[in-house]
Length: 151
Image 1 (tube, helix red, strand yellow):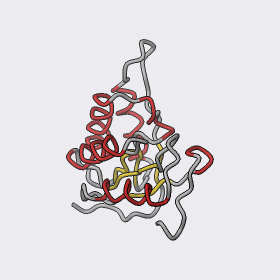
Image 2: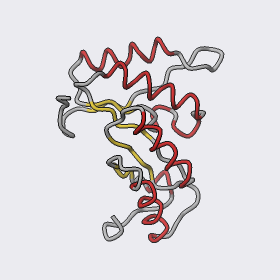
Image 3: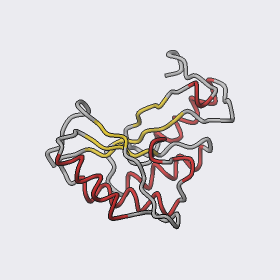
């Protein structure tokens, strides 16, 4: 596959829903197609812009499937797989890898306020999946900051 580098323009995708609260698959497909035709380097499904804390597991799987399908081989997929629960983040990352994601966006665990050692262990467990990780360090939202030494 001839994919673009981890540089350029990446779009954090919204997750569209119908009025009944279910995923609007056709709208999601159209959003990804518009981004691809616009020349982005990559797309990010299930980031915080995409409702990551509120997405059900089956919805997440379907979103990753649709985005990978529509992104094709020329656009990278940065899958939001983070969670404040290490086992959920590992499972989400494993699923994203299975479905063809290129990289995982993993937020520092929110609410729990882990120590630096806790952060290290959290990210090491996720790294064992074998998918590259982009650390999403947003202290204002998670109440914990990963220090440079820990990173």
